[in-house]
Amino acid sequence: MFGIGGGELVFIMFIVLMLFGSDKVPEMARTMGKAMAQLKNATNDIKSEIQKGAEANGLDAKSLTDITGNINAQINDAKSGLLGDTTNLLGDTATEIDKVKEDIDSIAGPVKRQR
Image (cartoon, rainbow, N blue to C red; front, side, top):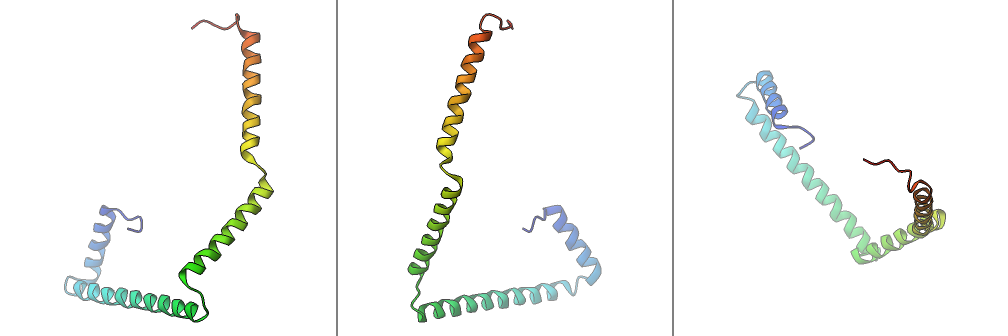
């Protein structure tokens, strides 16, 4: 929860208890609970208004998914165009590294140290 551990949470509760007293802590918790419920209701209302507006303009969840899918496909095409085919590049590099390893092994064959 927000990167706060158990010990830190107990310490914060102790400080709140010391500052406000035991009689006001339940009242503060109730007020915070009501505020969180109001915030949740407000965000749900905003989501429903956005959804209604999108449906009124002829957009539904499927068409939005299709649009975002097309946008992501275009972005991936642009990335591959800019970066090129990196798998082929990595494959060529690996074969070159293997060739160099073989050359080193052939040169240093009998000279290798014994462990």
